[in-house]
Image 1: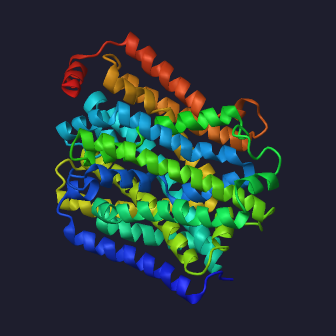
Image 2: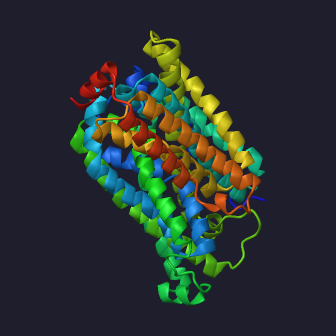
Image 3: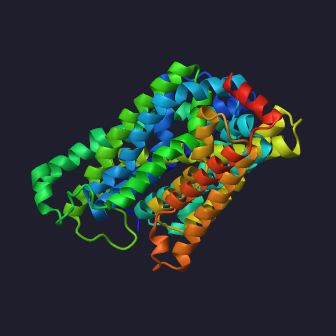
Length: 480
């Protein structure tokens, strides 16, 4: 049964229709593949900050963080908090360099940059890893949006996942990066304002202040380490490393007009992410004091939105949908670039025209959407899906990526085997956790064995095998 009145329902559908119209408008504005994937490389710091925010803080992150705070307490702040820390570290260490390298080689994707240093085999493995991770990211956004539609409109969850996927795919496939940019600022502001400046203050007064809220929480809910320090450390390392291996991080830098804009935009994003980290944790804690036991299938975020006054409820839902749409569209765009740029153009048809690549990118977005829908239906844990994506993306790619910038050893074979074997270990570890859930071995977070294998293989082969003449030329050109 729907929890929304007719006006709120119309607002939700009007928003979804507006996103599709923006995609149609962006379709007319795009000129070539550079416009479709990096917006012509002319974004400034404020636009980049909002794009960072809208791509990392999606509805899946918001809903998942609120649910985690509801079930575990203050310790849930580590999820978004790790993203804020990652923004700062990445901004200070890498954004200027990546922007310069991307501009020099006219890179559109992260695997393309990897090839500039290590060769085509490494690019292919990086493409496979990135694609798998971004299908999982996209599935997380579909699932988050579906839970909103299901919870407030009373729809079946599976049907809601298909509706969520269709609306995001159409919007992204039509407009590409221009559509994402046109809505990125508004969507980032919508989620920040709706959470930090509207919802959190209203709930603060409804609960009677922080002291009263704390007194009503279960024992241990204010323990910042309740998640388990091993898990927290694994989560933080995984998310921070993902900044260095996530294709979206590179796309933001490639789209910047210069290195200074890339750095300032990323630092500004850290401030916005921190506001969301505090707000989502607070909303989850309030939900626990207001509703001790949620109905099966319900989310803490949905329960809190239902307590909002008429009108405010619609605004907050728009903020949530904005966060989901913006992040989901970025994920679809990245994965479609893996198909069109990193596989089709590089290995199948190097002479493909810009127009053909844009069309293929749009069709690839549909493929990504269908795969993500099936993953969302199969695994309906939002944070669980996102954590898998972070682990797959970071464990095998971080060490070779770091080596590309700071180490004069390590060639294509070392990088390719490091990435490939690490990916195999991570996948094996997740399978082991499902098949042998009580095994002490598989209780270890998959990021650690994956990262260990990647490091041993890359460093070991890098020290043993000298660079050949072609690899030395690639290294010199990359470092120029």
